Length: 401
Image (cartoon, rainbow, N blue to C red; front, side, top):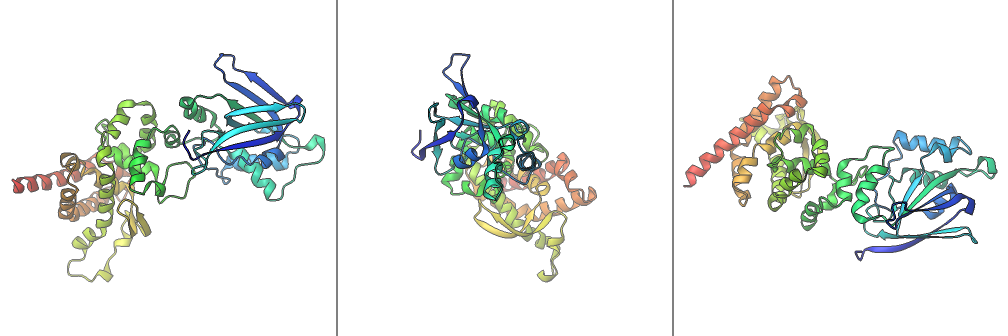
């Protein structure tokens, strides 16, 4: 186990009649402990870590239903709620003291990527703690006291953990990217980004709103370079499906990983395109005009407001919609793959053809009656932009001979 893991022991009070241990019927050394425990014990245990694919959102309908079942239905929470599932390194029950002792290893740096702890999403656990700490009190009457089902798993193989988490997280759909992260399937990419000090600026896990960019957008952008992905427009209108397939399609994953040597430079280049777009607009639209007359912020595909380009380490005052940005990024992929070691050439071509790309996007958007989604899905748009870039690149190559 890595050095950032900290041993944690938790003691939960539970009557012997309400705590049962089940040996593994397959004879693999695993076991389950099933207990009916007071929700107060969950609050005391405060297990705020585990191999969890997402952060807990208390704003969802599922969380609100859990809260209502806890606070408004005395004596029924045990039956209304599916319970809490924990993955423990070891467990021991003392039938003299009525104490169930659970041993975990907690990742001190990234608690919700710990190998042990809460693995069923954590919403029931979080709602119970939140309600009690906000003033709700469990009833003193035996008939109205709230209990919760607790299932503890021991002896689970590391290789099966991500599959187990995915299977148990059924109250609320878990994004496949969260499971890819949990299963370490894209550690190769995250290590590249960590080396460039940008991984922490990306939200990889569900309900993680801390990052400047969503992990899905990173995968979608890099998938433009993936030779195993035949229909590149899916990067715009089907990134979730691509990510789902990455979990089961080794060829698709190997195709993505094969571009690891240029992954960061390409992401940085896409940020460069993003940052250059306003200049392209001005070269076309403001010839002989004052910049104060610019209507850039009113463009259909532009959202005004501060936007962080994390790979370029720059902040701009606008954001291009994906239905424009992804076709633009795609248009340079042949150039990137033909000159993978020369980002300077990529930028030179972008500076040269950028205004024409802007004009083409505007024209195609107008012809689509300003339907941006239609533009993002249009293979004609993608291919037209690519043809413009490739023609300029070939001209550059001939001039360099």
